[in-house]
Amino acid sequence: MALSVKYTPHFLHRLEDIFTESQFILRYEKGNFKSGYCVLKEDGLVMVNAYYPLEGKINSLIEVLRANPPEEARLSDKNKKLLKEILAETPAEEPGLPFGDGNSASNKA
Image (cartoon, rainbow, N blue to C red):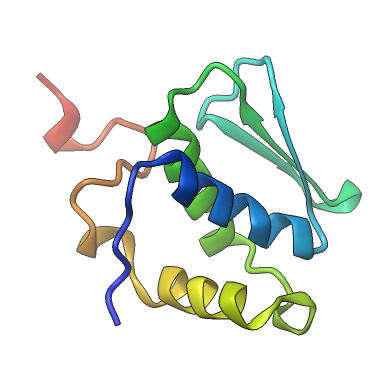
């Protein structure tokens, strides 16, 4: 099943719910994170730029989940299902999600 990313507060809460059940603590903080977020694996902490718009927060959380999948044993069935959908998709399959450092040829003017 293809992941349908919806840029709504409800979808953001669904992603945050995965972090609530995972080994990571999710925080929204001020900062100049080059990619919009920072993962401190040793501390189990994920920080997302608090000033990011809704779309940026959702994209950042999806990217973090793909790079650092949580332990499925900790997740409820509904969150396991959403996580599997997120992990099944690749960034190239979702043209609406900006990934990388912003220096690709398609991003240059």
